[in-house]
Length: 158
Image 1: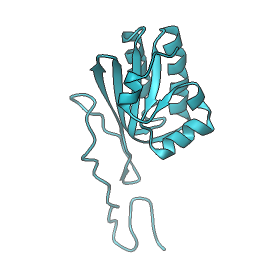
Image 2: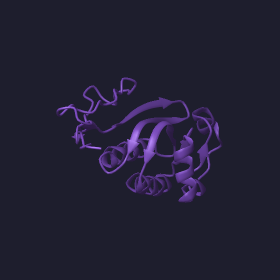
Image 3: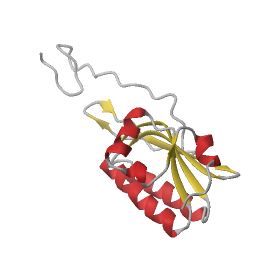
Image 4: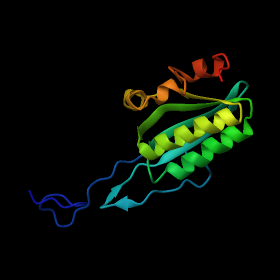
């Protein structure tokens, strides 16, 4: 086969189709685009913050990796510091991937939550994310709930 990154077969420099991410919710009025690598658009991370009576929910959509780590760190830190003695729920229903840089942010967020006397919880992780949390034992430190509603209504655990 004569494949090159960004090109198909014998077609003359025909770019590989990229997947459209039309269901991605923008986190801000000006969504940040990720660069193309070898003609393939890399998935992004959007974070939608919603304030509820019992806490703040950060809905994560996309992938958390080195390229999105800083944005994830800033969003979680801001949520925890503006919700002292409160609850921050990470809605992972639309999170497709998390690597070691994202796990590092979770560990820092857990520490910040304890310092702020806040509760950090994870809700609705897909199987792949739940497996990663279990393998790394993060699920023993950060409570994991099946739904966002369960995470918001659970008794305060510190």
